[in-house]
Length: 291
Length: 296
Image (cartoon, rainbow over all chains, first blue to last red; front, side, top):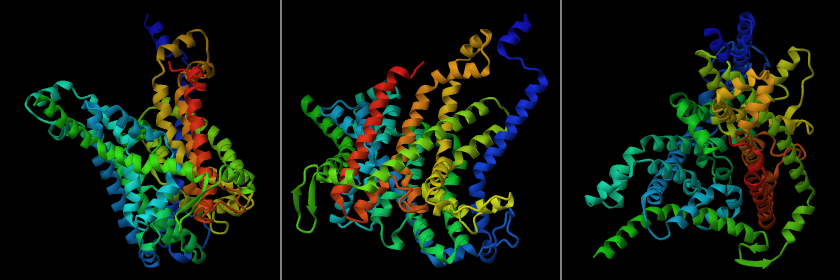
């Protein structure tokens, strides 16, 4: 009896030895591929701590002979890297917070409100998820120049916050999963929409808000083409586009160590977030599709 | 009194929804219409006048050899990345399903990590590895007796080098998606097939594959968007579309027409063509594949 159950659970009962070898082989392959995936980041880290003279020797030594921290101050001296870092933080936090501030009340209205124009408004907001931002680039650029916002961080933040369709959609789902009785009871006690939103709805969707904030931060931190178009002064750039300036103008001098040191500053916040909340980030990425 | 209260709460609801709706209209829907408009007129920004051009921008674009190259390159990016982005994460998801232990979390983390980085950072890391003289890739090649390559400076290789970078940065994204889909395949189906004498390969092909096809198709659409859009961050940092425009794509072509040559009309026409391609892919997702793709 027990053998039939056994064969049902493990229908392909390979000889034990083969299974064990196969499993070790699988582990070895996965470990090798994981290391291969990490290699570009490892090499970036290695180069960032390698002295200038040593960078020019194309060796395969995994660690520099004379590790140094000099590349970091050197990077800050060559380009306004500190400004880039601060700008990136300011822009990413503003975009993530702005998206939540705009999307949360709207999502609550779409989830619980009964008012004329609700469905049309929801369609207008969620419909933007299907619009590739490429189609908005040129007029938005012209508008930004006209409004005198060119070369300001607001020019990056405002259009990014406007892409709040997914946040609205995601939060509406979260609000709808809360029991309706909660809100009905509050309404009987005389609580209007704003109070229901602030007192009941928001505290109950903290996890969704946190996931959206992290997602918004990451996507804004990684923005490339739009900041490239609207930020011109070197001091106003974000890290992503500063790196491009560094890579294309610093290359002649072969400033690879400082360039990699700067890149590490771009990886660090993302890496810290990832290590702190890997599960949440992965599941947020999966539900949001791409970014 | 009652009607007034209802109207009062209408106002509150409207105020809650208004910022999101207005931002979407001002920064997405109106610019979209403006792009469609720009593609059929010539705008003089200084005088504030617009002259009707009809299909002229489209005709010029379609006759531009650089546009042909960008279109052709976009097709290459897609042809290289589409199979890679689906087959490799699928194989990895399968492998991860068959191992257990603490190491699994580490594998998952390591394989997913590049997906959270930005394209310019990925590009800068690889720019250094691709360096023809000091890069680690040529050092490895030489160590194994190979011939050092010019990588990004080689017109016949640059586009494939960018594909490698894009693949490295994006394959991890599909891994949890495929893993979740595979975990959702009922174990009884696999066991039933095994009892009927189906080996591991046949079970994978005839049970798993049809049941996870929505996830595969989703990955396909994501890859199309990657090739049409995000990859531009890697192209700009690694090659600026070169050498000899051999690594441009449609968006990079649009970017150059608009912001290097200030041909906003033509650029708007290209943007409209990109929009049509994306719309076509979305339409295919809903129409053609809805029937074939199995939703279990």
